[in-house]
Image (spheres, rainbow, N blue to C red):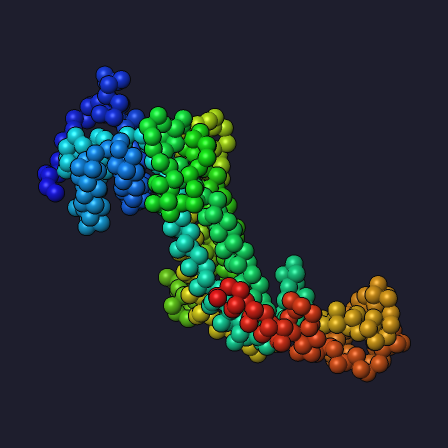
Length: 474
């Protein structure tokens, strides 16, 4: 296969685009060229565009719409173009607008007029819809691997910290003692739901638009089942209008990515808080920290802060495409060219954030003594006291709740913990209390007592870890 590559600037800047030159006698304004061109971002679709073209070409030959000779020349030319792009030898031209026309023009240079037969029975409308679905399908597969890696890191860390007592919070106020392993396993569940959402999105997007043509199908005797199967789709999209104008799959992906980013941001926020001097729960190594240009003592959790910030990009990508699509009548409109940037950016951003978060999980080192000490603060075993009054003393829970609140107030006034409050002080509030109550006022015993399914007792955490390894890691 030979053919000289014409320089990108060989066409006059005022030339009429050969794609619609029969209808137009004048060329577009320069600003029109700039706003219309998408090659700067849609060149990422080259592999998918070539795969779709090869499947379409093979189907045309099988259906006797294209000669075997032309089909062979087209397939060989497309293979050469892919090789040129991957080696960096391909010259992308803004004059040719997008990845489809860049490849088509180069194909014409390589094999001549036969290149023009490739576009029989298809449109750029079904072509780009097919390309984006193929690209997104692969992106989802990559993200699932990254999410699996994060789950594995969280599960491994949780197993090491299954009995590490720490405070839990509501309203960022100390609530009850839990274990660090239990806390980390909560994020395993979140990422598990993120994976399910992406899997659902992948399943729904896996229909082939190819063959829908511009919007009405085609009069050529094409075989859409064959091209769908060749490209790994489950089936052809059943309605040609919907096939070319549907971007639900992209919106669904962006929504799933935004939710996943929110989960990562919540964890990132906890890392930032936990690394602060006020908390001192964990430390990150130099690998995931930065310093200050003026304050030599600083160690900043910048990786976590950036994961937290990049959630804005994911949210913005979803809103951008929702806004672009919200008022579009059927079928295709050029507005849909704006679907690719948010999809590409969201996929790239989420993949980076997942990798950074996985790295931080593996890197973080908890201060177990500090976690244990803080878990004793804030009267964190008050609920255990109320439960004891119900379970042992037989009080109704509301009465037990009021009594516990009064006891907490006495401990607060004395500046001591519940475990340090004299028995007489408790009995002054509720005479039914006995010395046995001290058995539940220790943070370790509080944690160990939470044996209900999904609870924080170390034995439950270890059981949850074993089940999660089977459910998520296989």
